[in-house]
Picture (cartoon, rainbow, N blue to C red):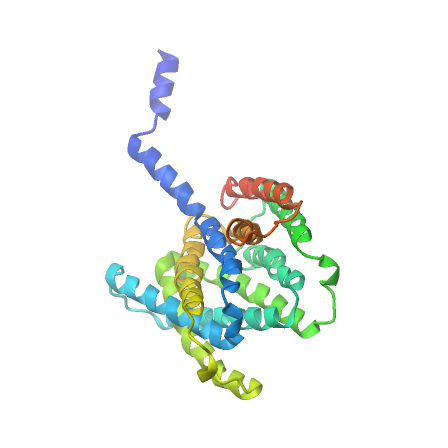
Length: 318
């Protein structure tokens, strides 16, 4: 009788089980975002380098913003924003525009191995800001998981690139990549209060919309500084597919999924999923482009996956 009663008291209804599964899946949404960003590596092979960095970043957020605004128009309720929230969305837009600008410029000025700094350091910056700004607590399981995921990612990267030139001569480019890492971490952490007041979709949408004119203002400066003729860019099918992928998947879908995870878990937990990006990129390169992912891909990927598992099963706020 006692055991039976206890079992009945802890039994879960089908709705409760379904809700728990849905919550866990949404908490894993940033993993899907990282997978979409990993696909950018393959897209770049389709003639993506033909577009100057700032122009490319502008096209990316313009397409992404248009898609997000259309979805919000249909699904979100009418809003009356306070002055504080309007300033919050504006600040997020400026920050994410700065992150894209420095990432694209930094990538253009550095090697692939130096570009891997963005992958490794972004979670570190996010954790630091999550602890200091949001007051998140770091459990032992979370710290171990982040450390294991970092180790696995480094193993994968050393199999792809020669990391001995990470500290090479491209000082300006490396500096921009560091700024890109820090600003994306800020975009992640400072978006949390707005996500809680509104939603992941709306926060991603309005910040993306603000980023459009910010990056658009940098395009004429880029043209004047480089002497690039935008009219000389040939809109090939590969280039169109690349821009659409960046805008629809790399921005609209990925930014929403990244923020969606933060509706359920801490920024420190979300940050670990960023490590999946280079692993997915190497996988796509091997399967779609016939490239060799390197002997350390399987080992590093398995270690990274173990670290992400530890982080993803860490209770938020503990």
